[in-house]
Image (cartoon, rainbow over all chains, first blue to last red; front, side, top):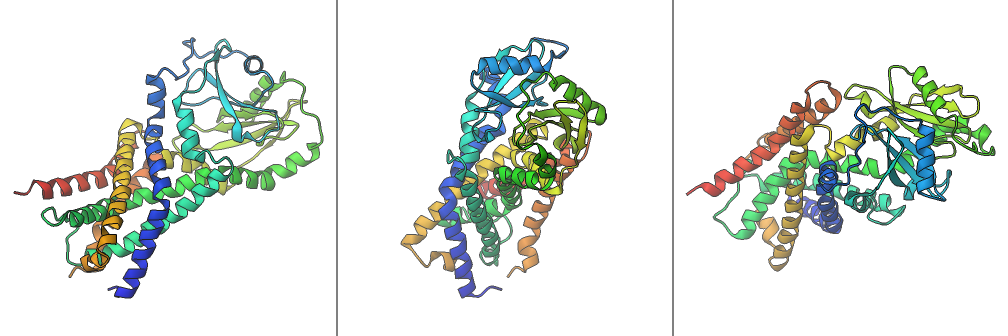
Length: 367
Length: 58
């Protein structure tokens, strides 16, 4: 078993990695709670865009893009998406210009049946920005990355120091008739160790999600670069009259897949000359992955169908594992319960540290 | 004095069930959601039962 010196070192790692990151982690847990139910909250609050059509017939995408750019003068549509949880609705990601970085994009929604723009932005947009970027702009993902590393250090050291505390106790023991601090320590140990596996998955996938921009940059450098370079100095297409033809060509090139979104020429995921039509599969796994088909915006011909590299696929698969939104309402409820347990473990960890300051030998003695 | 196996056996089982359930539900088609429910339900139920038992003792 562990010596007193190494136990002290592991306890110090656990204590300080947790304390330094606690405030941010509590913000992430508290803002993550409503995000688990964002679809339900948006729907209840009347912010979920709804189509007027019953058969989800869609007018020309070009007309929808024109309607969006008319509704947001001076802005450009960078991405056109068909989200699975919004049938009949077309999501348009608007940017300052066709080539602007997408960090500050905002979404407009259009009724696919008639192109009518639906009033956007529910309260979840604000919470999502706070959760994903902490309102720190490009520094947000870096801060979140550091916090995740601290979280992992706290979990690993927590698992290590769990053993000395449990030498003479059975799993799940909570000594309710002892001092309040002892009861809280047992609850911290039980809840922390039982949820550690889930917390590692959520933490790591959260870090992968927050570094999505870097993953895209790497993909651009590796796979998109050779396709984009010859057209870098070309002017962008003056209009999007070829957009519908491009989507049809991509569908024909990958008939087993369904369009998920289109990246417009000049955007971060396309070239100056191509529409990048990203298509998804229809199985549980392939519906979360996309295959890009690049269609020449001038000739309407398919230039390339690419297979995304494993690191991009891992990023795409990290999203459902972070939000827990792929197993229906029961999984969301369990996700929320585990989130609440994490908030409790964080808060009672601070309580344990605070009460230990008044009795420095308590931690080692209890082990 | 508990051995490492006794100390980490139960937590390890909970982590494996949770991870297995989540990955199965993500990768499999047709009604595999229940795998994730069982996987994540286990740690929640185990904690709830253990705590309830200790607090309800006379």
